[in-house]
Length: 508
Image (cartoon, one colour):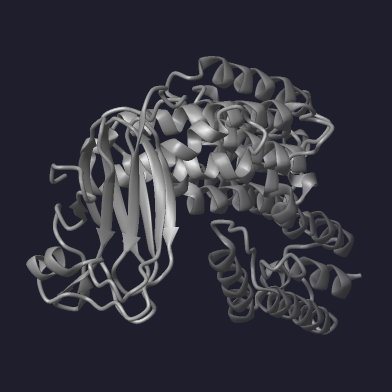
């Protein structure tokens, strides 16, 4: 019993068995081993004491207990009259290392809590820095790191105090990211709300809880509101992208059901505004028609039909607007497109004449002072014989009291003249040459002409001129070309040779 008592006393790690045997040096070794363990263990850290060190200390304690028991078999315990008392004290003192281990685990657990709270604070700092950036894009990376930090903390240590604070922290982060939406900046809100909606794919729904589906409703609202705002501002392309995304992501949402009626209202407003701002409104109606073609047909029923009706009405008005603003090239294209597209429209003939006048006015602005009259004037008409005295075909456009165009075939054997004077003197006067010609019957008035020479080998510049048709005369006009640098160039303003027929008595 004496040996067992001495051994048990040494199991406390304090060397008390050696002290009872009056073995001072071994007792000091035991105290030194325990002191070394305490130095390594305190203060408690989340990592704890290395297992190898604990094993070494336990080995020392066990060896010391065995050694003390061996020694106690051969010598008495002076001052300890009853060996049972030694054994009882040893058993009581075993509570010292056991209690120390329990206390250390508690301190270590608290250290872990403090470490996780510090980790939470660092994640909070990331979220705060992201919120302080100018715009979501600038803080996106920090937001992502913060979300990953919160989610990792909750997943790895769900029962810790820090993890229990994560839901509130995530809610605050979501509120920060969604700031543009709370401030009614719906277009700016689309990117951050889309980012929040995609977070479950990267961090998992479990980590986000009820926040996983929170962005759905505000994102649907932002896509609809921003899309319709942009459509109303004439940006149907960009707005249409948002509306398309709305149908792709939230086809059954209330907002998706509002798109069709809203587009119909927009089409009605644009159509009702015609002919004011005709080009702008027509362009918007075309964009609305194109947008409706990209969206589910059942959701935007009737939008395209109504928009196309407005486009037909607006295209002609746009051409008139461009003509009156002096944008003759654009007007010619618009009128031509209208006449080619809407063959049954009552304004088709007017559009064809206006296109001719606009094309002439590009070269001769005086031809664009007013649109050609819808009807030809009555009264006497004068004859104009137009001949081609140059190489290649020639197309002649004219506008005045009446408007039209004609094409003359190439003149076989005709060549370009060296000068305007030579052209005036010799154009269409060789009796041995058959000059292609056509006859026009024109009411009196001021006319403007555009000559467009076709040639397969040479570049010939367009030529414009003007003339006045007066009652009592017949007229001839000969188109010819003059050689110039870089090819065949037409003569200046008076290049068309107007000559009187025999017996008129007056040179026109």
